[in-house]
Length: 77
Image 1 (tube, rainbow, N blue to C red):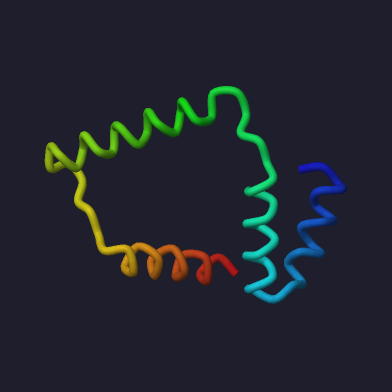
Image 2 (image 1 turned 135 degrees about the horizontal axis):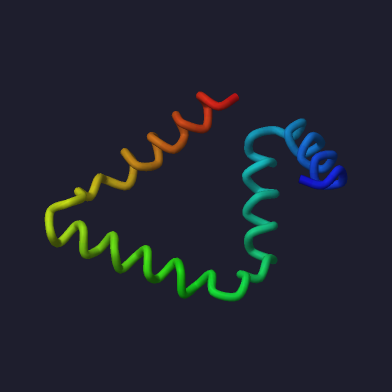
Protein backbone atom coordinates (compact mmCIF):
# COMPACT_ATOMS: atom_id res chain seq x y z
CA UNK A 1 0.00 0.00 0.00
CA UNK A 2 1.43 3.39 -0.94
CA UNK A 3 2.13 6.01 1.70
CA UNK A 4 -0.63 8.23 0.32
CA UNK A 5 -3.21 5.43 0.41
CA UNK A 6 -2.10 4.46 3.92
CA UNK A 7 -2.50 8.06 5.08
CA UNK A 8 -5.96 8.33 3.52
CA UNK A 9 -6.98 5.04 5.10
CA UNK A 10 -5.85 6.28 8.52
CA UNK A 11 -7.94 9.42 8.03
CA UNK A 12 -10.95 7.44 6.83
CA UNK A 13 -10.77 5.20 9.91
CA UNK A 14 -11.31 8.33 12.05
CA UNK A 15 -14.77 8.79 10.47
CA UNK A 16 -17.93 7.39 12.01
CA UNK A 17 -18.99 3.93 10.83
CA UNK A 18 -21.78 5.43 8.72
CA UNK A 19 -19.35 7.86 7.08
CA UNK A 20 -16.86 5.05 6.42
CA UNK A 21 -19.59 3.08 4.66
CA UNK A 22 -20.67 6.15 2.68
CA UNK A 23 -17.06 6.76 1.60
CA UNK A 24 -16.51 3.13 0.59
CA UNK A 25 -19.73 3.10 -1.43
CA UNK A 26 -18.78 6.37 -3.17
CA UNK A 27 -15.33 5.02 -4.08
CA UNK A 28 -16.80 1.79 -5.44
CA UNK A 29 -19.47 3.67 -7.39
CA UNK A 30 -16.90 5.90 -9.09
CA UNK A 31 -14.31 3.18 -9.72
CA UNK A 32 -14.07 1.44 -13.05
CA UNK A 33 -13.61 -2.33 -12.89
CA UNK A 34 -10.29 -3.56 -14.25
CA UNK A 35 -9.98 -5.59 -17.43
CA UNK A 36 -11.57 -8.97 -16.77
CA UNK A 37 -13.23 -8.11 -13.47
CA UNK A 38 -16.83 -8.57 -14.65
CA UNK A 39 -15.99 -11.76 -16.53
CA UNK A 40 -14.25 -13.19 -13.45
CA UNK A 41 -17.16 -12.22 -11.22
CA UNK A 42 -19.69 -13.88 -13.55
CA UNK A 43 -17.62 -17.09 -13.50
CA UNK A 44 -17.77 -17.06 -9.70
CA UNK A 45 -21.52 -16.41 -9.70
CA UNK A 46 -22.17 -19.24 -12.15
CA UNK A 47 -20.03 -21.64 -10.09
CA UNK A 48 -21.85 -20.70 -6.90
CA UNK A 49 -25.24 -21.15 -8.59
CA UNK A 50 -24.13 -24.60 -9.79
CA UNK A 51 -22.93 -25.51 -6.29
CA UNK A 52 -26.33 -24.54 -4.85
CA UNK A 53 -28.21 -26.54 -7.49
CA UNK A 54 -26.00 -29.57 -6.79
CA UNK A 55 -26.42 -29.25 -3.02
CA UNK A 56 -22.75 -28.41 -2.42
CA UNK A 57 -23.72 -25.02 -0.96
CA UNK A 58 -26.81 -23.71 0.76
CA UNK A 59 -28.49 -20.36 0.58
CA UNK A 60 -29.03 -18.37 3.76
CA UNK A 61 -31.50 -15.55 4.41
CA UNK A 62 -30.29 -12.06 3.53
CA UNK A 63 -30.42 -10.75 7.10
CA UNK A 64 -28.41 -13.73 8.36
CA UNK A 65 -25.76 -13.06 5.70
CA UNK A 66 -25.61 -9.35 6.56
CA UNK A 67 -25.31 -10.11 10.28
CA UNK A 68 -22.49 -12.54 9.58
CA UNK A 69 -20.60 -9.87 7.62
CA UNK A 70 -21.22 -7.23 10.31
CA UNK A 71 -19.98 -9.58 13.04
CA UNK A 72 -16.90 -10.44 11.04
CA UNK A 73 -16.08 -6.77 10.48
CA UNK A 74 -16.58 -5.93 14.18
CA UNK A 75 -14.26 -8.77 15.16
CA UNK A 76 -11.48 -7.26 13.03
CA UNK A 77 -11.49 -3.93 14.90
